[in-house]
Image (cartoon, rainbow, N blue to C red; front, side, top):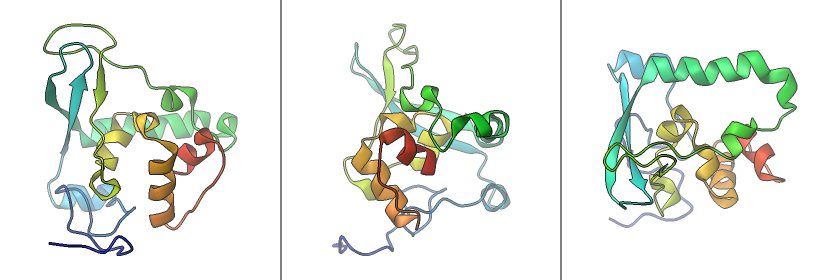
Length: 152
């Protein structure tokens, strides 16, 4: 299949994704579809193996929500430093610390945005990828990466 680059409608790349670029389903909608686990790929920079990591949707969403609730005033429309420079985690396969990062698709329409949000690893995205998400979510943003990441 060939899709026009300018088309805002795409085949959903994940069960939790929508057919609209830059749109993530609500928590209630995901739970009504009995989607409780969000999965994505990560890669170790030492052993170079790629494997899947799963997050409990409700638990991880609460963690992300807590960052906003407790720190919103101090953020001043800038992403929290932990989000702009996420720390790589320990590899489950080789055991090396600070070795694993999420695999981010080359095609922007195939990026697993919800997995990155729940893992608090959106900071691994390039400024271009973040701006593209904001553009399609109807909140175009320019400026420094921490401000665009906050808008994402």
